[in-house]
Length: 124
Image 1 (cartoon, rainbow, N blue to C red):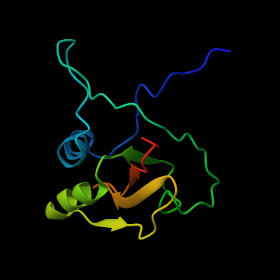
Image 2: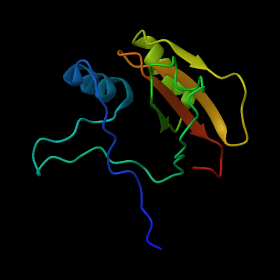
Image 3: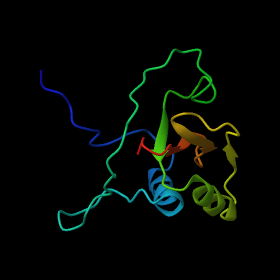
Image 4: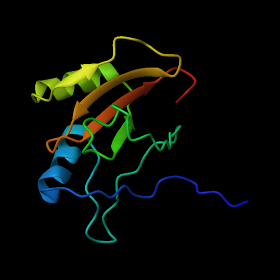
């Protein structure tokens, strides 16, 4: 059986796509989609990716009007949280360290839930 090899893009509606693309680039380092073939797109590092449809009752995605959430792997959760907080972004760090790593949650400027994940050693 053929299998997909990864996620090639994540597309979603936004009230202000330009401002939101700028926010993701400046706050999280997810570069904007290039406008020409000469420019390079944002490239992920290899690692685990969860693909998980969730029930309508889940609270993990924020309020019931939200239908998606994205989880970004990070090398150093403490440093990323400090960077975001220094830019006045509210970040909630999960106090528990799980077998698969540590997590933090925040919302982008349009209220979409963003989760940060620092994989445990051996999970990266």
